[in-house]
Length: 130
Image 1 (spheres, rainbow, N blue to C red):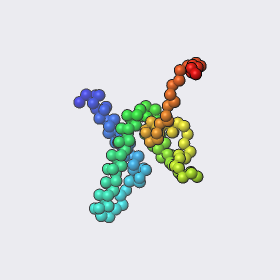
Image 2 (cartoon, one colour; image 1 turned 45 degrees about the vertical axis):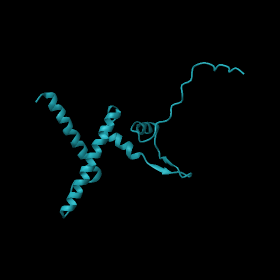
Image 3 (cartoon, rainbow, N blue to C red; image 1 turned 60 degrees about the vertical axis):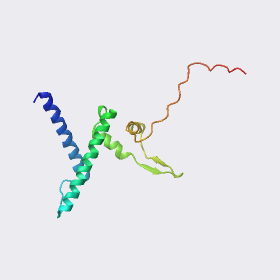
Image 4 (spheres, rainbow, N blue to C red; image 1 turned 120 degrees about the vertical axis):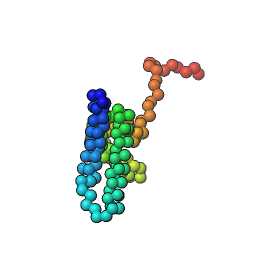
């Protein structure tokens, strides 16, 4: 095995360790404390599903280029803050998000991107003939 291959395999192993550590802390999976086989199977199913979702998120963060700017933990904090509530009109709106966080949600396509204004030519507009 070449040194490059070993380094690449180790980086994948490290990603798995980070993901599992995050879910053990976030979902309190340190101890199962269950008494029958069905509880263990259910716990393992939840761990498996959460791991699959996490790696899909990691792939999306890589595709959008967010990992070049932020860490996994920082992106997850932004996603945790993204909450909507109904206003007086009955419409849902985001609560307490700054423009940088909104831009991250738009890059991830959680929020729609704002429509770009059409480009106008420089200078004064021409007079239209009567």
